[in-house]
Every structure is written in structure tokens, then in C-alpha cells.
Length: 147
Image (cartoon, rainbow, N blue to C red; front, side, top):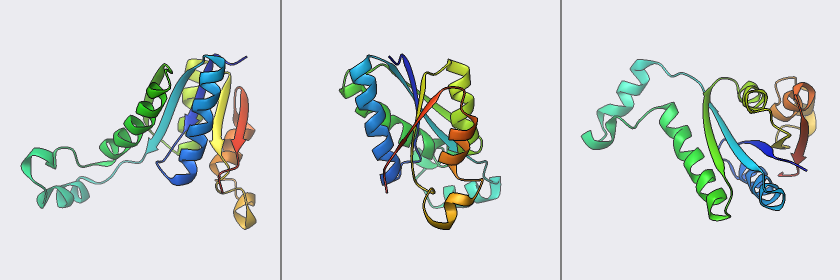
């Protein structure tokens, strides 16, 4: 049924629901799982400010890419605990673009996203990640009820 599944996460509780569903589907279909998390560049001044008070051994681990890596490592550990082959993708981009780009790159069969941002007035905004993904995906999309 599915051989390559992509799921996006920002580490939030609602994204964890989508990751959980993607893990379940990957286990059931024996698919590989690609977990995507997006980040935006941060100014050197801000990073230096955050590093100033940090101990020397962790100062180099402060930044948006490192935060995303922690989120991805957590999701990957959960997938591996279920026996799933998983790859992580930290991507410097808008979240919807990051998910779509990875899906195209790996020729995904399915993208899994949470429904956060699809209720109320926000559902009409074109910037909503699930809306953008569902309208531009190169494959099937599963929108998980997470809110």
C-alpha cells in the first residue's frame, strides 16, 4: 500500500499526534518513514546572545538547526522503537515547502500532517501548513485530527 511516508513535525503536541499516526501506518505497511522539521535562519547576533550565558560545552549546540535536530531525534527514536526504518530531514524553509520538497525528493506515497490551523478563521489563510500541503502534494495526503 505505502512504501514511503513523510510526516512533518515542529515538536508540538498536535504534531506528535501526526507523527504517531505516521508511525502506526509505517509499521502496518512496512513503509520507510521520513520525518521533516523546518527551521528559519536566525541572526548571528541573536545566537551569540543566547550562547553568552551557556556553558562552553553546550554553547555550540545553540541555534535553530540544533533545536530541530532534537525534535527529529525524538521522533526517529519513537519510530525505531517500533522497528521502522526512518530518516530525518532538517530543512531550512517554510514548513509546508519543507514537507513538499522532501516528499518530491524521496518520491513519497503519502504525506501525514496534523490539522492544526484548519479550524476557525485560520482555515481560510493560504499559509496554513495542512492547506498548502494538501493542495500542492505530489502524492496522497492524510490530515490527522490532532486538535
